Every structure is written in C-alpha cells, then in structure tokens.
Length: 297
Image 1 (tube, helix red, strand yellow):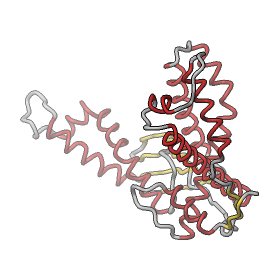
Image 2: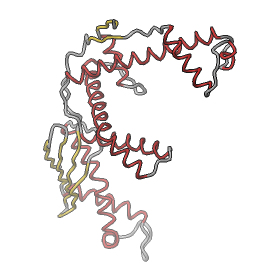
Image 3: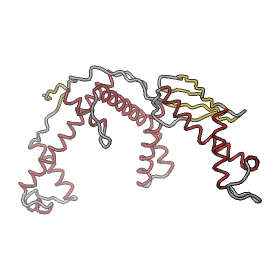
Image 4: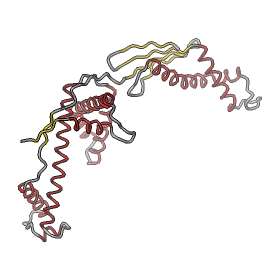
C-alpha cells in the first residue's frame, strides 16, 4: 500500500491511497469465491460455477464489493501507520479501480494540537447562596399574583394548605430551601463559566470545522422541532433559524473549544474518566479543587 499524507491545515488532512495489484487480486479471488457459493447459473451446480462465467455475469458486483471491503481496511491501516487520530468519519473521494489497482483519497479532520497551561490555581469568585427574607417575600408575591388570577388572595395557612403544606411556616421553609438550591446551582455555573473563560484565554488550538458543522446542525434540528411543535409555519421557522444561526454557531464553537481543552487537561493530568462518566464534568471537578476561591463581597 502506498500512502501520501498532506496537511491542508492544522486539523484538516488529506490521505491519498494506492492499493497494489496483488492485494486487489486477492480480494477479487475472495469475492468471486463467495459469489460462487450463492450464485445460481443454469447448467452448473451451485458452488461449481467457473470463475470466467462469474466474471462475465457479475463483474460489476464484484468490483463494487472489492472497493467496499478494501477502502475501510486500507484506510484504517493508514491511520495506524501514521498514528493519525480522526475526530469524525472521513470524506472519501476519487475512488478508482483501474489497471488492477485501487486508488482513493480520504479527507478528514484530526484531533487538533491543544496547548494549555496555567490551569491550576485559577482564581474564582463565588457568590453567596444564602437566601434573604426579601427574596422569600418577593417569591411569595409572585405566587400570590400567579395563583390569584386577578383576584386578591392572602398568603396564610389556608394558602399553604392549598399547595399541600401543613402551614405557612412550613411552606416558607420549603420555599427558602428551594431558593437556596437554585442559587447554589446558579452560582456553581457562574464559577464554571469563570474557569471556562480563563481556559479559553490561555489555550491555543484550531477548532475543527467538521465538529462545528455537525453540532450546529444538531442544535438547529432541535430548534426546528421545538418551533414546529409550537405551531410556527415553515417560513417562520426558517426566518427564526436565520436570525439565531450566527449566535448559535459562535456558541457551538466555544463549547467545542472548551471540550477539547478539558480533554487535553484530562490527558496531561491523567484524570480518571470511566466509560459512563462525563469527561467535562470530571475535569471541571479537578480544576475547581485546584482553584483559588474567594467569596464575593
């Protein structure tokens, strides 16, 4: 097998393959042997059809099967030989079977080189998750308006009973706990965003276009389904997608860059990630343990 490797850019590679006659011939032998076992030709017992008869009647099918089997085999061998790690399926081009040789071109995106440092001791600021009486009262007022439907209602034990609580005091305690949980989750996300922004500033990498394209298509598809379920017309959906596409593409690229950076940190720090665990979550936990925390004033 001959292989020529060309880097089109830091993440886009082109591989040109040439499979020699001897290997192609062996593959034809295998394919015709398999065809001979199943093909029925008048005048011959099944499995006893001469090769030249099979070639005269099934050469097109044999060529297709040879190409179908050889390309993935040879492509994988090329990846292993050159120690290339693709991040997606390749684009296969210019497939030819001529003069006994098979040639084809594979274009693929590879895992980019990521250079990241200064990710330990990241300074992060965490806001307090303590719930104030004012926040509880504000939420109670919201309940009052949403439950009242234009009618004046009183926030008392009877109101709490209607929501399934034994008393207003118990309802208020439960509400305070839920508000604290929500604030804590929001504050955690804020801290993780601080870490992410720090990493984006410090890391150097090229974002693979194929990853952005695929993820963008998935998100647009989800948005399309959601808008359609809301009763929007195809024209309205198309207009909405065109409006949000630039911002969405920017968000997708940012998410991919963060993932690739976290993946690199996991490799550098040997962060253990099991098969059923989320790599991004595990690495973020590692970074937050290493971070320098301070409380917001």
